[in-house]
Image (tube, rainbow over all chains, first blue to last red; front, side, top):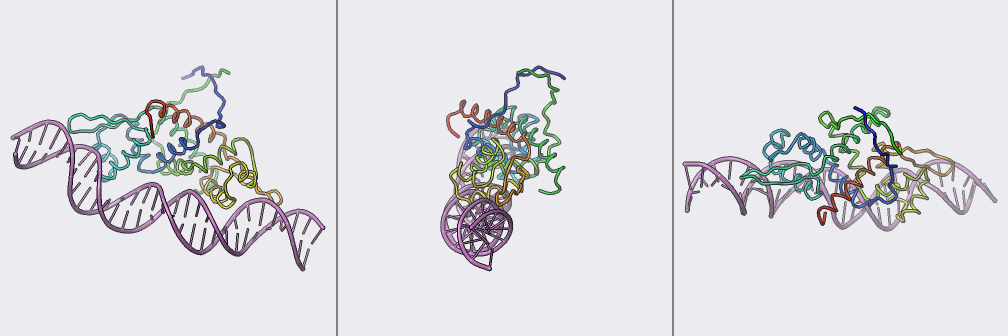
Length: 112
Length: 112
DNA sequence: TGTATATATAAATATATGTTTATATGAGAA
DNA sequence: TTCTCATATAAACATATATTTATATATACA
């Protein structure tokens, strides 16, 4: 698909390093990233996240709390279940771009 | 400015969580992020990074080593100076988008 | 060769973070 | 109320990470 888009020049000069680092750090853990990948497919209760990832429930809860603290997920209760979902679709966009970048950086050099 | 772009749907299903988390973690420190912001303006020797940031030289060296380990910077020696530059312009694009997201997430809720 | 400068490395320390195990909370059903 | 299920919290622990201080390396120049 093709689209016309307004190209905004990338600019970091006025970025807030604290805020950006905080978000990046929240995404900088393999388990949290996998949670995000799971939630990218839709809203889910903790039990399903646990089941899809194969990690312990307290560990999932811990990381979900971190993601919530970073405002990356929204939480909603429904009966005994607590549903988590991504707070914004751009999270997926950004991580998708980061994944492409990672793949290319790795392709050019051999090891991390 | 306007541009025609091919819109690639965001997809994390095949992302490599280890690689992405590794990159995100490398960007998930305030000092490293500030180094990236400095290098976004161009290639620089360590001394100038130190001077612009107001941190100690060993601390700068330490974080530059981490950024290098994450393949985010390229290194080049010229006489007694060692120049660092960003390995890829997309680093700036991604962080710029992350900054926009951070600002909006913060605008909607009150505190991190 | 000796000295100064630029940068890296090492050692030491403090703090933060991820994980496990055990327990508490809270909602619904019997 | 009591039981069960879903989830959160707490405690304990191990590991990783950021920072400081001190020192080493390497290049240029006198």
